[in-house]
Length: 198
Image 1 (cartoon, one colour):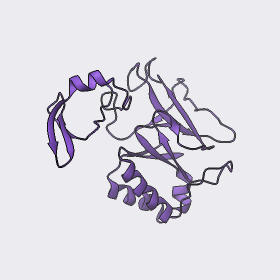
Image 2: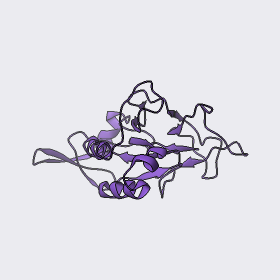
Image 3: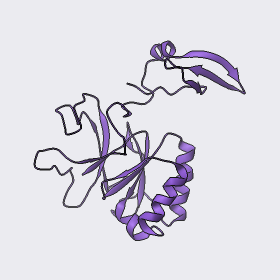
Image 4: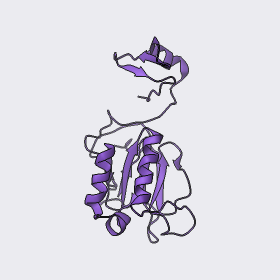
């Protein structure tokens, strides 16, 4: 199996949650709920997603307080979790996590067909370097509840400046932050707006 990876993902070995996390999966889920972060698993790796790097770093501190290790070296079982950017992949070498970004749904799947690129990861075992497909040559993919092509992040910050300007109207400066309104009427308070590609 594999899992969809969007935005910034903290990917944790499922085995580490079961064996090292205080109160196992229940303790893990309790910590995630305090961050209100999306989570999904394929029961080999679990993904917790973030948009805000500061919130992600706060979550990493919780993982380390719980005894999980973030040490990236060549030792296969030395680390329990890693950080993955949806465009460029793991931020440091992570020998147990496979990463891909491709048009995995362009030939159709049980959830539909899409020509967009998506990022995904899987647990690399010594006897399995690639994703295992089911008997219909489609691998199973773990996604968060409610995930669909319409809600998926396909790209981050790769929208040309001219398109960003055409989609946003500046409302002015308030408390040191430039406010914008997008084409849907939503106010965006961000000095450098992040527009997610369609």
